[in-house]
Length: 109
Image (cartoon, rainbow, N blue to C red; front, side, top):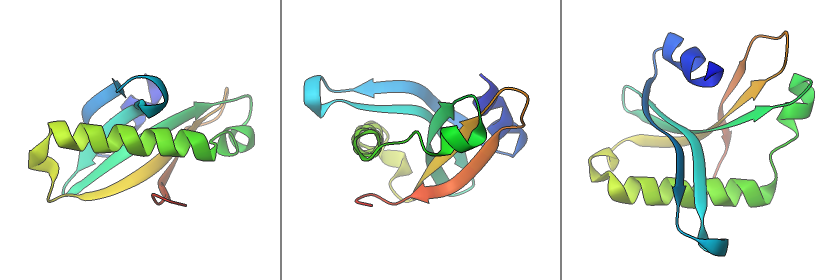
């Protein structure tokens, strides 16, 4: 996956990908979970015809689903409890370099 490779080149270590937790309306999903130093990032990957379209593709409902997935991931990995957590966005578009947006949103935004 392009996004995971791009993040590895930036010094992140992949902890998980495509994690789906729960069922029904309580389900959570995270595309990538990466770590660099004391930072654990839950990364949503959006691919669209342009980076601008990808940047606007994340809905509030999707953010909540990712936040639920992050909480479930952390519950299964208690060793990460002391890490700094954030939610990132990775934008992909044909013919363009990937764009990584660290700390793209905060829970409850």
